[in-house]
Image (cartoon, rainbow, N blue to C red; front, side):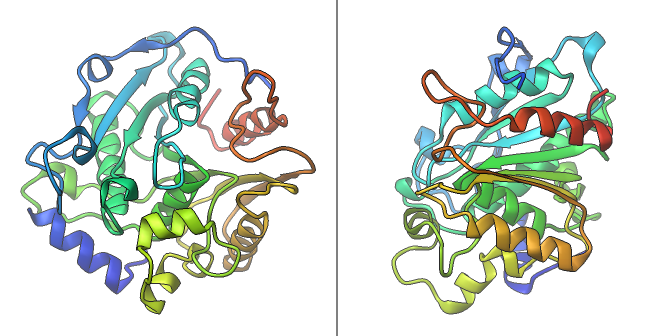
Length: 300
């Protein structure tokens, strides 16, 4: 299991302190009605006490009889500047329709003054929390996935390449859980912080003049190992916002590391489609995703 020195030190430091048409909105859990604060004592490195400083998880539950035992952490995109609703609750509606318990993460953003590692801290903590809830609720803690789109796809790709096994001796039981997802779903993802990056995402994540070693660290095509979990990755060839090279480089790294993957490059489609919106139909990636999730025993 991979422990990059820069990431490990940052996390340890702060841990101490298509059927694309969605079904009716799933039944909210108590956590959705009463949004769960990710860090009850305050997020590490917080800049204030306003909503943008307080990461939260919102849960969406499928009907009890349809649950498969799997859970999904959802990381909306938005260039590390905002959070796209259709890539958050929009995805939750689809996953719950197929029996997967979902949690949408509101993570801290560059537009609110945050930089790495705040976003990764939020995502890693959220994955640990989802796994702890899976144990509590009789779900499978070994079937916890993550999905992210665009910059949320970068954050998801960061989580699948920069995870740790947890701290067995931690007083907080959530921090004892592993932050490694059991699979990753990356939708038109930002991957690299080098050539072919999305400039806005890079600026919001790393600032104006990031150190070369930080650019290397968060160029996730360079951080894949044999311990990276299986990934489903899709993009479109004519995406004008996040170049398809991001997807191709990451999948090539997965292939070289021997990590299972499912890759779909559709010829046409603008950036940010999600499952499609009025006037902007999406390619049929939902169908292939469902096939892949079934093969990985996340759905029946």
